[in-house]
Amino acid sequence: MQVSRAIGDVYMKHAQYNREPINAKFRLPEPMNMPILTANPSIISHPLHPNDSFLIFASDGLWEHLSNQKAVDIVHSHPRVGSAKRLIKAALQEAAKKREMRYSDLKKIDTKVRRHFHDDITVIVLFLNHDLISRGTVQDPPLSVRSDLERL
Image (cartoon, rainbow, N blue to C red; front, side, top):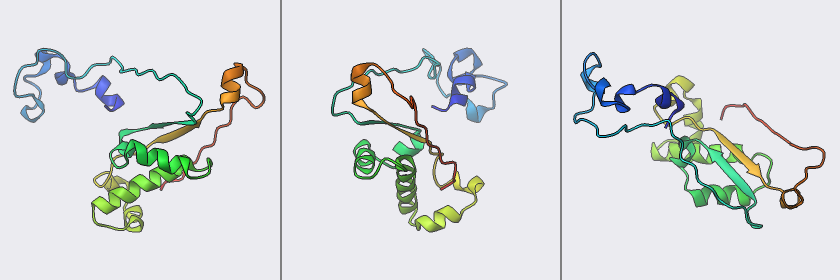
């Protein structure tokens, strides 16, 4: 859910707000027994294994167009540099394909209008260094961050 959903959409959290003066189109047709939306996070733990080489953190805009396996295949089969950008491009290519248009034509659409063609996509790929993890120490440089703010 969007961050704003945790703050807003109070009518989906508490039944007493699912009535006037909320516009009828935003109200739920049946009373709720419990909140539909909650600020309580869902947390999943996964112990790291030696064959785990990276983590993909992405918004739902990516997963709407790429399966987990497809995303893993893309990252695994290319150089590390540019992995997040490659995932975004693959998702946008799929979005264009679903709309029966070319990727190049999708990119030409103004960003305000493109929202109707695909959701926002944010991706971070974190590569794991098992040598550092097993030693429990970090050598210089402790962190390498690459960022590309170019719009695709």
